[in-house]
Length: 206
Image (cartoon, rainbow, N blue to C red; front, side, top):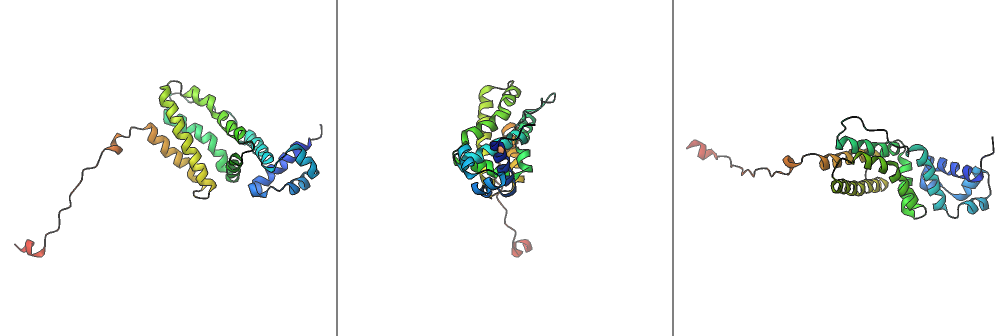
């Protein structure tokens, strides 16, 4: 068996640091020390810290969250289809919340951002469009746009510490339900009831 290449050792080292301590745990001198390579080698292979972290996240995702979803069960509803795809994407993050925060920060940092975002979409886009082929295209496009913005928003709230990781899927599930259910009962105004004042003691006596 051939010896692992320095780049592979460095990336594996960074993945370990990210899983244990998150984005801020990656210091290039420590990476070089643990990978048993020189700091010069690290910089030669990965010009910036952000590029190195983006590469590590990309490889982590390839192993942990980028398998294609399985085929739909017979008669699957639109709600069921969308939730199955969202769970496929977010359940690995739910098991590894620190890596979702790392992914968010790496995508915001600039280096490798497009690569990471494209990788995430490539997981579900072919399957999603095939599953949704029976629905009206403009409706599907609107669903995709809304869910993309909602997903970005809840991930940002998680990364900012505003919600726990376990709130992401329930928030997305409520959104999908509202987008796919018949919402007419919920949008009907309730009748305005004017409260009747209690009778005073003197009124009752009369």
